[in-house]
Image (tube, rainbow, N blue to C red):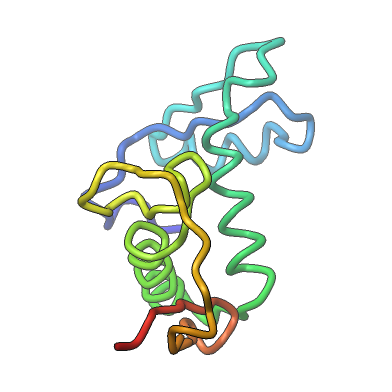
Length: 134
């Protein structure tokens, strides 16, 4: 809750207009000179990208791992971001990760009997990465 000690704090808090956010909630942030930015009214898609990212994090990490403290959360999030950008397949990119150097090409079926596959568990097991072994 000590926001003053953070040099990288942007000074604003974007949030939607849900009734669960009370005046007391806003007062905590306004006491530290944090500006509350409300999403546009009657614009249900305004937060769609952010909600999609938060939903993915919740389903793939937070529902499976008990975080002990902020430092643990940062380590887990850094590992997940590395996995998400380098290994996790994305349908919009034809099953290639975002950091893949080649342009997306159509995916072809792989004969798993002809290749050995190595599974590498991440974050203690809730996420797995698979790689072909020569």
